[in-house]
Length: 239
Image (cartoon, rainbow, N blue to C red; front, side, top):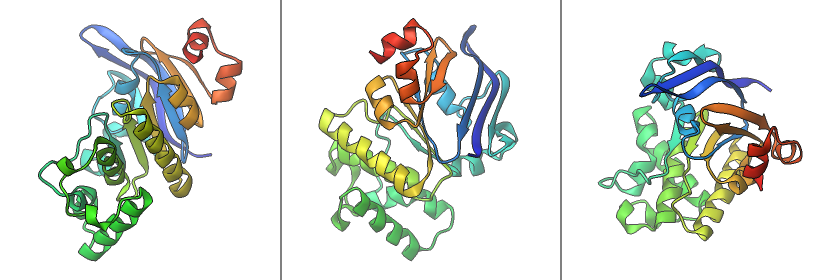
């Protein structure tokens, strides 16, 4: 497979502490890649380097074989869909306007944007009546579904997801896990997903990167990590 993202000896220092320490990591095109670890492990900082919300202090991050620091940031971020833990829909825009935000910036025609909105809503079992609703009129799970649609609306090369389901109830969480698995299978988009939940990581990931205190402890398939954990911490994290 072709690499789409590469971390080459990447370190990040916050307030005198190395939160990421000499990270070497490659993510393949079309992969569902999960980064997992406890709070403070560096997983979110790693994720945010993919769309340059965090810059490395040492080493380089590459996107499609080009250093991220050499990209025009606006163009880079249009290639990367972003789903946050906090449901970050614009409250003054209706659902259609939220979904169509990036396609409009990219100059899609009105008809093409609307067709895309309707197509995506159907994928998440929401009908056309949702288009003109405001985010405040939707449940938390519905809002997060729309947040995912907004991230994929313009067919980005990569979708990054930062603990997007952790604040949801178990039923909504299960449904949205199924949704992103379906999106990945149907669209083949590269997804990089951060979680602290090992069960979620095992359910979603083609490969899992386990981090602790800024270091990468192991990166392998769920089965390989489960059968051959790199150390006692990885083993305990999987139990």
